[in-house]
Each structure stands twice: as C-alpha cells, then as structure tokens.
Amino acid sequence: MLIVLGILGILFAVAPAVVWMTIARTRPVGFVIGGMLLAGASVLISVQQSWIDVPRPDAHLVFTALAPLLIACGAGLEGRRESSPAPEWISRRNGAIGFLGMQFALTLAVGLLYALMISEGGRPVVQGPPLHAAGHHHGRRRHRLRFR
Image 1 (cartoon, rainbow, N blue to C red):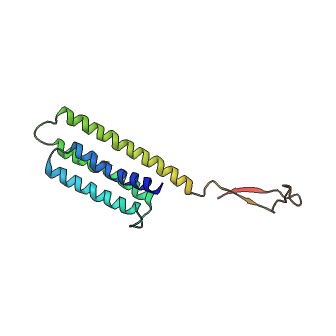
Image 2 (cartoon, one colour):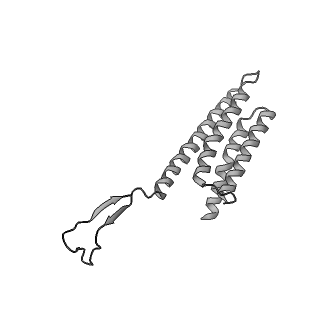
Image 3 (spheres, one colour):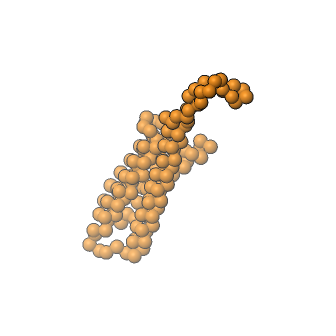
C-alpha cells in the first residue's frame, strides 16, 4: 500500500509540469516555468518521503495553490506573443485549467477531511463517577458530556 501511495504522490507532484509541457509555446518561458514547477515537485516529493520535515497537508495545499498560479502566469506570458494562439492551444490551455482546478478541489477536500480526522474537536469526554458493569452509577449524580 505504501508503494502505491508513493507512486500516486510522485504523479501528483509531477502532474502540473506535465500539464505545462502540453501548453508551453516558447522555449524561454517554457523552460523557466517548467523548471520552477519541477523544483516545486522535487520539494513536494521530499516532503512526501519525509526528507524535509514539513506537515504534508500544508505542503500539498501550498503546492496545489501555487502550481496553477505559476501555470496561469506562464500561459499569460505565452499568450502575449505577436501571433494569436492556435485553436488547439486554446483547447489544451482550457483542459489544463480544468485539470489543475480538479486537482486543487480534490486536494482541498482531502486536506479538510484529514484535518477533521486528526482534530479532537468532536470527541465527547465523560465526567463523573465510573459506571459499574451493569451500566448504573452510585448515587444520584448524573454524567455530563463535555466536548473539547
């Protein structure tokens, strides 16, 4: 199972760079944006493998928020060329935006689910005397539920 999660983590980290490769039109902008995306993927993989001590959900959320912004900046720079983009480039760009939007939404949903799972906000704590085996307690004192 750990191997599958490791492979999925690497694919998750490299996906924005692959998306960028499909829409990059010029070498200078393509290499700069692609290099920055690969550097970010390397840092994320290092966090996933515990080579860098940073909370994983935070690293995933930051990467997933910054990668689309970087790609949007690159696409904006690519769109400023003298010649207008070809229709197939526009459809690839729109597909890239859709893919990265889905990746961001899934990361946000999984991150929130993870935060809920590790929080102690909803666990009830029983105060009062311990219950006997039959489920009764001594005296008339009632148990109170309190949430942390």
